[in-house]
Amino acid sequence: MYHSAVYEEPLLRELEEKRAEQDARTAGLPRSLQRTAPPHIPSLDETQVVRHFFHLSQMNYGIESGIYPLGSCTMKYNPKLCEEISRWEHFSLVHPYQDESTLQGTLQLMYDLEAALCDITGMNAFTLQPAAGAQGEFTGLLITRAFHEHHKEFHRDEIILPDTSHGTNPASAAMAGYKVIEIPSTAEGTVDLKVLKQTLSSRTACFMLTNPNTLGIFEAEILDIADLVHQAGALLYYDGANMNAIMGKARPGDMGFDIVHLNLHKTFATPHGGGGPGSGPVGVQSTLQRFLPVPRVIKKNTTYSFDYNYPDSIGKIKLTYGNVSALVKAYIYIRLMGGNGLTEASEVAVLNANYMKKKIIDSGLYTMPYAELRKHEFVISAERLHADKGIRALDIAKRLLDYGLHPPTIYFPLLVKEALMIEPTETEAKKTLDQYIDALLSIATEDPELVKSAPHHTTVRRIDEVSAIKNPLLTWNAIQQQ
Ligand SMILES: Cc1ncc(COP(=O)(O)O)c(C=O)c1O
Image (cartoon, rainbow, N blue to C red; front, side, top):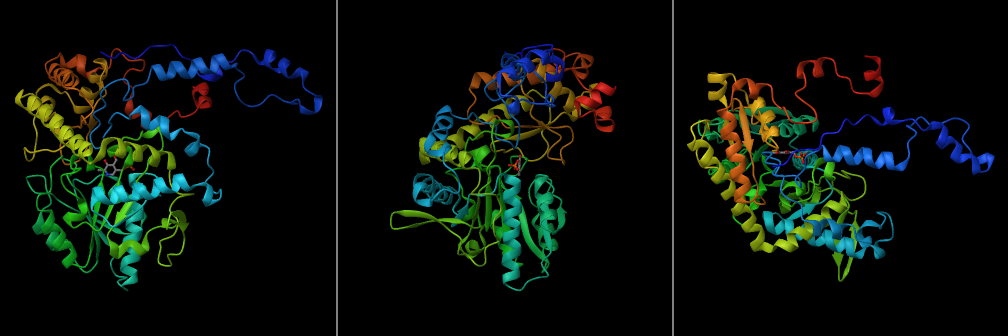
């Protein structure tokens, strides 16, 4: 079982005690190079700084510490070989603006990665520029606008999405200048075709959908959905955050989607958040190719180059060409896995989720609203525990930390009360899944006061979240003034 280290680790400012010594060390420099006043940073030696950050890292939790079943985020293990190759000087020491003839390897990798993503999704062309799923959504919606404006359909100003959708979907739509219309799901947790039909109109620019959706349920009526959307003259957008469920099994292009984003930092095992930059490539059908961001990577004979000659392009979406180190890692991952390997990854991801789901639901301690059949993730509810013992999803998440386990996503999707959204991924062993199931079941039968006051064994205990929001102390100076 994982227990984080516990240090009484002061802030760097509080570690400071060596100003005089360090200042003295500059004494050997010519006077013209010496500082006249100390810099406004803590004066520490290298050992102190390295130990400080090492201690902080030991009090942290990552995928290398243990299971990280953060639903919707696909926190799978990131293979070390991909990390290593991305650090090769051929990739890490190039400058984005050096002559293209000296960047042929990187350009070829980008070109081949685009082709691989087209194959996996059934789309016609990709841009690798967007730096995250959310930026991919924004890019896709700018393409949507460019498409409708090209056809003089300036009146299309609405984006429809289901109430299962991720918060970035409406946010991206609003950022792209659209009015957002949310429609309720059926009792089964899927798109309500009747409501969709009533909502679609000549004002609809696009319908955004995740499939499987954020409940982990596959939208089986997707072909009918696509027909309805296209009959209304709108586009169908695929939020590819859940692509890990269906690789090699189903392709958004074949389901009728016009635009797709992928999250390389989820499905294709590149690090997330603090572990590295994201990447949210966007794929389109051939009718939309002309609107993709520039530059596009092209190949003439055996030479690769950047092509800016796309007059209808929405322009540049990110500085240089995207987060290239993430592209390298994803490319290596795809090549290492191969087609069969990717298919197997999805199969095992779905198997792992359903194994956990069954054991947890069979216990009778948690409920699972909506349809039974789930793909790579499932959403359970702590509603019964809340009603009987006052234990909320938040309390369970905090108590899991005492078991040395990372909590799942909580309170999302919004339509499930006291939601715990679990996505184990394919990279966890059965023993780990059993350990997680046992922890969840054990927490449900513990003394409610113990659970409600958790965590008890972590470096930082439960914070007063209301005060943290109402009276945030975000800087060292603010803390000093307390
Ligand atoms: C379903 C879904 N859509 C979109 C996003 C946004 O992706 P990103 O975090 O890469 O911006 C997420 C992120 O978790 C997601 O789960």
